[in-house]
Length: 400
Image 1 (tube, rainbow, N blue to C red):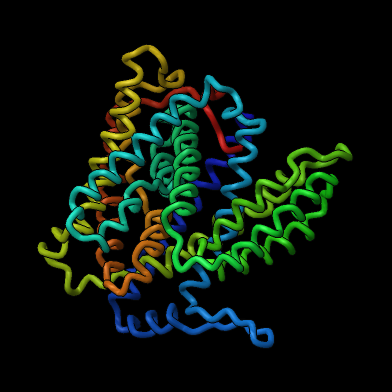
Image 2: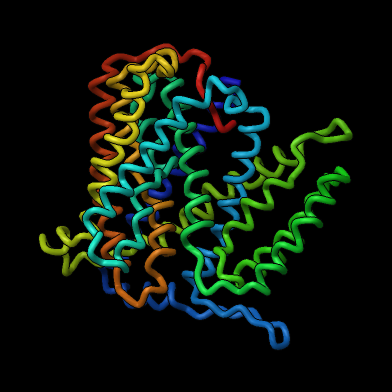
């Protein structure tokens, strides 16, 4: 188990480093003579047509709606595995990371809403600072090496699991538009088919992929965000093999993890992080949208994650995992303010169809808030963990 966790954390941290590189590359290109080419690339029209049926979107939305569906499929598989047989299947292991995640989503959202309460369009981005980017956060945590216990890394991953679940619920409930009942009914019609495949114990993944693709197309046309098809599909992938062989869910999760970590997420980062800094000024930074996002990530995550856990711990109902001190927990709460990937994704949902150009503002707030949180979390954890510690088997949760 410990070996598996370490391998997972190495993969996540390597993915985070690649994400940093992709984001930096996008910003360099967006502030170079290649900026016009970059804009033309992400706005390149891409069409798929069969008779009178067509899907026509710019390349950016194919990445955000299409490739990110694979990311959400992976998230769904990880959620199902953890709640079926992982540490999160044990009631005692759920409470601490769950409280941290709830606080870490609620307080940043309230801070953003307070700054943008007078602008209904800007207010639609309230969920942007509620997200945590586990790959980035783990990459920063890994820089500390053996200074931090393995249980702390696993705790951060566990908080991110609940954070992902909250983001899925938020997207499903609040970020749908122009709902087409007919297309939605078509998508729902595939659920009994997927249930039948699961009930019959079908372990070949091709039928699930085929009907999952059809459900994705139907959701794309329905107005419900198409990436949710990945989460729904994951719930029907069998966890246990009736033949006694390898778990279909674990096999698919293993196959997806590398391609998502080193392909989908860096492509998403490069397509969404291009921020031209030429006209950035103090007034730009103090605009309610970037200011609300940055303060939500930096201040809101600290108050939400650390404050909620500390307050509930005083009641005696929960306690940190073994080996995790409160100063370490404060450092983790700051790292949770690294929102990058999921924050950018939610921002694109909130503002891409409003007709108001808040995309620059939300990217600026995400980058500033994530940068401050990452640096601050690293420094706090370095001070809280001055010496190397023995890496004992974790008593907390893990995605692997």
